[in-house]
Image (cartoon, rainbow, N blue to C red; front, side, top):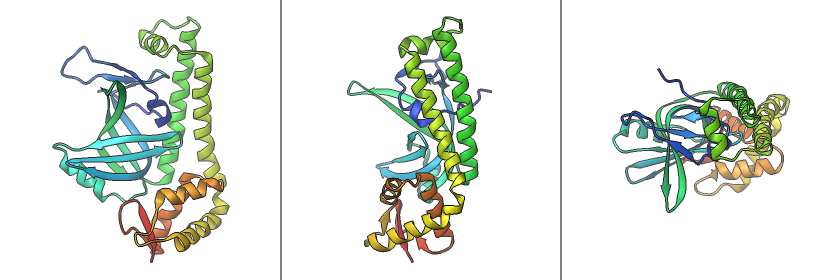
Length: 256
């Protein structure tokens, strides 16, 4: 049975290579710059948006490097309903199929979920660390391919397509290191959670309108003061559980 691939949004979003499977009954692969062959994905991150358009549901799931764009719809009405009922924000794990197509001469990436479940921050953090280890392993293999010490065609194909260089591989390594730092920073910030809570409560009190405050606005405000997205989302989840605030609609929170 084919295993699911773990890949960061920051790498997946740069992909422009798609190869069909020799078996016409199977979907092809989206191949990333660091050599991940993506057909089935396992993702974990912060669900930050759920919107509907016709019979389609669109969602965004963020990890420390960027965001994945999810599309749910067609006959999969049960899964679409599940996404509509998920709290925003919340941490989720998703099994999905990767897709790529060309629209108006532009490469468009999307992800079609097959399963979703709510998880906690610890599960998300472990996904980041495991994905970081996997990504760094692939980068090492790509480096060997650049040096001419790799004969695996699955590695050589992305090297040629993306015209990979040492500089580009270094950028990918820095992306992974930054993701790890954000997880470790959150853990080291534990004694400061009361300060983050005060900031969020104050922002909700001052900036609240009829619909409350957009979660994205709270995140933007917090990041300007050096507080991570992950810290804000975890704090909002706690405030909701403690009945300090509620969600009048998707993506908004309001003091009780």
